[in-house]
Image 1 (tube, one colour):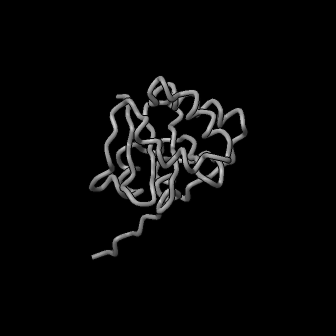
Image 2 (image 1 turned 60 degrees about the vertical axis):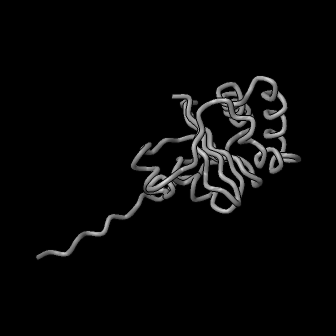
Image 3 (image 1 turned 45 degrees about the vertical axis):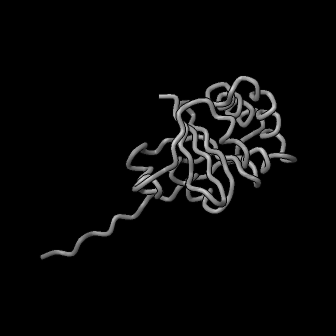
Length: 139
């Protein structure tokens, strides 16, 4: 019998995001997922670093679309990769914004607050320090 070949996970790429790219991603996110009354306020607070962490922490209460905590296999980067493939978007946290995949955004977001917005605008993910990640979907 032969040995089982080890499959290496692809190394996730992370690319910086310019201010215009961040603004566009956050505009897409707030238009798609945030209740009407809070869109402008949430957008302004996420664009600037000053109140970003506070806003990320309270973000789940302002979501108007379907949201559910990640469960089962989806709680792992491998599970998210199996479900969504290499879904690319922007992840935003206290350190700033960068482009990456949803599975890598989950790794980055462990034990910290963050927001992932998919480029297609139909999926977002919010991570928190004391709760399971939340998947938001307009599908």
